[in-house]
Image 1 (cartoon, rainbow, N blue to C red):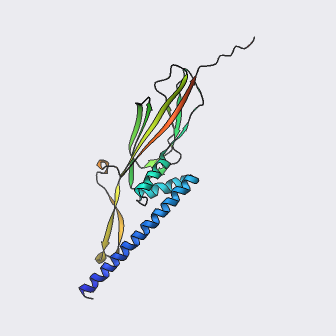
Image 2: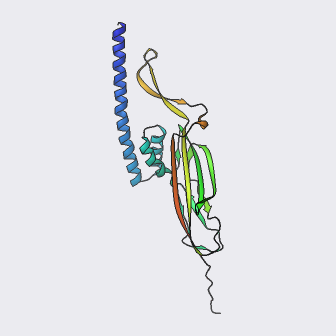
Image 3: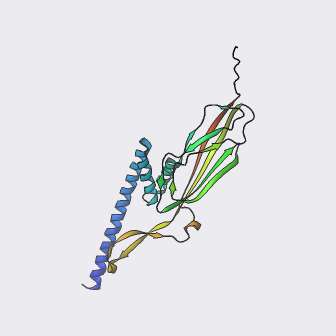
Length: 217
């Protein structure tokens, strides 16, 4: 086989490989859209991990990731209908499901805002497993008068890559068709985030005076 024929064969194989990739990309977008719709209708732990995997492996488009992250990371808030004046109002916070990332790491910040001011918050860096993590947040400053008070719990999720995908094509080495492979990223903690998500959950707190009942002797 002469060099010209070999080059033609390689070009044809490359075109076929790229065409197959483009076709699989369109199919992947459709599958992601269906997974998002299914999770909205029937949220489940398996569905949450499926969505996380679609973000993690790059199957989801940037627009689809914007839909997925709030679905995964908007917490459930549980509070009392009324709090007694003098007690510290607390709200229970919990994510609905646990998800695991393999190629991404999440930097997460949680903060409580009251009257447009950041009162306090916490954060974690480089998380690959993000779970329910039930915990309590309190309204600060503690109200001194009965009434209705509003607070916001704000979240920032920054997902940065630990690994990226590269094209591999080496006919002489046995890789006849172009394919994608994972490659570790050195010093990934200094890289800018690949995805970023901001979530704000408003919470309304009602404070009432303690009722004293005068019972007949």
